Length: 332
Image (cartoon, rainbow, N blue to C red):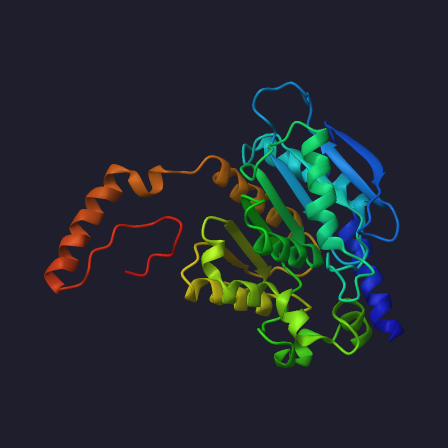
């Protein structure tokens, strides 16, 4: 379907365009990484903030950014400008960031083993960043984020390996509102051909393999593994690919399982266009709150006094009183 490919290329161009008008103060280093996981060396762009110090005692947060379908590491320029804007606004401290070129790979390990992009991110890119730059060596301060296909990839990777990431932020992730492949509706796949699915999940599609790599299914199978992983989901309510349906579906899976997360349905926002930049800044604010939790939200005097009064009301009504656990949704 040539018209679908044409539309897709236009969207890539829009998403690849710089998203802000600020001059970049930091530095972007571009080079390739070679591994056994991908057929060719992978172009990567590494952003270093102004005054980057290799000997600074407190490591810089590490932000792995995954671009949208068919994009490339060239998008780092615009995203780095937005990251610097977020730093100037006090949303997040100065951070090191990296973006690999992954085409339209879904950041997947293909069923036939010919390309292993998830393994590349986890076993090649992440170790390279930890060895080469002044970033955290553990999971604290290590974040993964992405837009569209990058949102899908960031969720899958973080959900599979919550031991490696402190937080994940997915903007308009390219996920379907389903737990099983047969439940995907035409509305949610009209822009993905059978060939795209078969390239990643096998020909014919291995439905069990699809489920093993579907963020919502991963979350539903063992939600306890995600407790402690900070999760941010968002999508525009006018998304031309209907990705808000998949995002809402995942939100409900997490909500029903009691997994704490932040979810935003952005009023009037489309899949591309001027809403992307402020939404990225909001995601950076989320990471900033992860790094410096606003503990006064739950421990402020007004909160504790009011909670004590409400707990008394519960006891009088015969309802159980349970201390709040910030890692879970309050359900009692």
